[in-house]
Image (cartoon, rainbow, N blue to C red; front, side):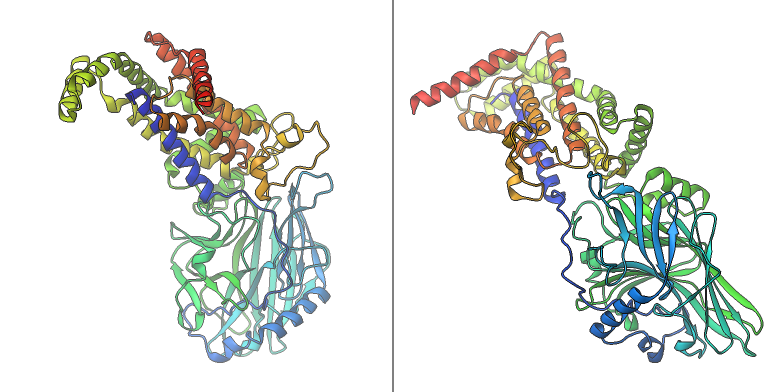
Length: 614
């Protein structure tokens, strides 16, 4: 096989490797599977004050039989009054049971493209509300006793609060919850929200007793089970936290493997001295606790298989409240979409340290971040994410053009040397060492580096992998239209060859079906065609096995990428088209114009000859 075809085969193999790895790590997203009833207790694990060793009585006060707690709490959540939440971006309610934020939907994002589609549900209560099918996922706040204060004298996850005044929570009207322990301590919780996704929670306690009291505030995010609709592997989903500038990501499967940590159970505990945040992240959404200042304790824990609750906590230091005095603590809560501009604004102006790093930038973050910003700029300038992807691909190809040019020139020069290499091969008469020495002299004489065509391809792989990552994680692709039949660039092409792209009234397989791979849409077919044309720039290898690999490669890719998001397929088509034009032009400029139609005809002739031989 000549060196030109070696380079092309290397390109195809490397591309196939990237796609195969991507397919393994990024399987097509499946529809959510509704849970079959409650799978354990709603009871969050009891937190411990940072500098006070938890006593058995303090821990036991919030730990009861799982099944009993599940039934009792479901009934309590359903019967307890709620306070409505309404902002331009979110809608939901707060339960007076524990003052828990357990009902929140994102108004700007719908579950499907249907006109009557419900809003994306972020947080859900235990037991549901009669219409919700998602697993419980909620935020609770409370106080841990210290210094001999009994556990039943402080509010916890199941305390019934009352509202001071009336009205719902809006950006202009904060709310205040209150609970009196009946022994001189009055607790209040003021909750405010901005016009996007940031809540501010101020917890306070007024001491009307004759003695000082010690206690510590905490916040908890509890998640029952793993969300079924998004189970990808390279894209991080699970716990995420920033501790004094250090980012840590713990996948759900690794949370279940955490070591036992004394009374904490399965947990990992970190101490933040200055600042940080902790919570859970999904592909497009996240819920994060962010204390306004340190120090604080950051905890990730797992309750065990029986209740299957994943939990993150932020615990503030113990405070001592003198008689007649009031102690308070303030934290932020982010619950919403991972919009880059929103996260950057909170990072710069709240501030929440390194908050944009809650987006999974991947291994090549030093490339992904600038690409991400460029895509957002193009989207804002053009107004359409599909065209922005095409524009971004053009810009990236322009930036790497010097590398591509070097590769294509090397391929053209190698092709010029092909006749001399064939003569040298005949003269060597099977002597491999003589052949290698002759080729090295030939390369040196004509100043050709055989590796020059491969190295640029290897260098470009991190760039294109980063571009893949950008297109995959950016929330602006979610339900974003391009043109015609493409109404959601984050979903596979909805058209199908099985019903002649909508001309026949035939139901086609859903994206979650194993048969979806044969339900090729227009974009995957265009992808296969673009790869086929790119391949035909060079003659097929003379070796029958290699020729067969080349012949099947475009169509294998077509099926492999058929279930990918339309935005990714659109990028790949654009990339193939630009690569074809670049290679054709550069090789023509060096006197080696590809015989495109001749290569196509010879391919069909070989197939016809092979069929006649059979």
